Each structure stands twice: as structure tokens, then as C-alpha cells.
Image (tube, rainbow, N blue to C red):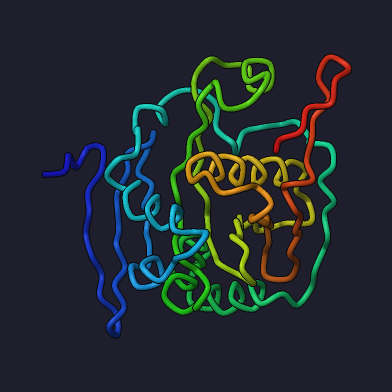
Length: 230
């Protein structure tokens, strides 16, 4: 039986679609949700992603999330990330449709749920992730901590044979470190699934703009040495 304090599971059926919901107490409650039918359809080179998504709601190391650095709080930039600003991406249109049904206080959740229920490419939302201290060079220097890095992906999609990590930012044009945040989501998910980083793409968006990049192009310079992330 699951401990509600750390993780609870409940199901929603909507027009034959099964959405699994896990309430994870990570400082406060995060609701990790996945479309079971879409996740079960993942196969081939991404089968480890399917396994991760199916099991992380129960096997997540919840204690990691109650201390240590969060990806959403990082305030440094990563070299090599070439941002492309797009207008008219389908995720912008989906966000606009979702916001018609939302009030200003729950726009974030409304967009996540709308995509999960209505978008054929969205597999999961609020996906929990973590990075162990031995999984990246210069961990302590980068994150100023000896505790694992953690985070939650807003929206996880499969698009054009790539795993897309999306973060909703209401004022995307004003973001400074959103690319760093989403890069580390990709890096963490790559480590958790053993899927090469080149199979991922990252982006953040609002109802008008989307900013996208390839995380495999990233690198850092530390002590005059170039350190690649792949």
C-alpha cells in the first residue's frame, strides 16, 4: 500500500483515456500525471523512458526533493545553447486554448491538464527527476551543494522521434535562466533512462512564443577546461 505522505495514486478516466495521478510530497504536493495509453505505446529505442515513467511515481526517492538544489532555481548560463525563438508553434496554440478555460491562479496546471487530455504528443506532466552527485563533473562547484539536484518537468512530449521537454513560462520573453533549467531536465532524464542526450530537445513557452534548443550542443568551461555534457 502506498504511503500518502510520500506518494498516492488515483486514476481519472475521461472518454476512455486513462490518466494516472501520483501526489508526491516534494516540499509541497506535486501531481505527477501520465497518460497510460500513450506511455504504453512507447517502444524501440525509448523503451527505457516508458519504464521510467511507469515506475517513478512509486519508486521516486522523495527524500531528495526536500533539500538540496532545484533545477528551477539555477542562476547560471550554459555555453553552446543556441536558442531559437518560434511563433506559431503548436504548443502556443494549445496554451491559448487551455487558458480560455483557466483562471489566472491555476493557468500552469490548466495548461498541463489540457495538453495531457487533448494533445496526442503529451505523455506526462510534472515528471520528477534527480541527479546524483557522481553523475556530472564539478557537481559541488556547479550547484553549491552535496545533495542531489532535483526538478519536475512541466510537460513531456514525443515530437518527430525526439523527446521534448517543455516548461511553461507566462512571460517567456523575459526569462534569463529558463534554458539552464530545461537543459538540466534533459540531462537528468538522460541519466535516469540511459537515452543519449542527442535524442532530447528542450523548450519553454507561453501563449505566443516558444524558445527551443538542442541540449546536446551544451558545454561548460571550468578551470580553463572545456567540459562537454555528453
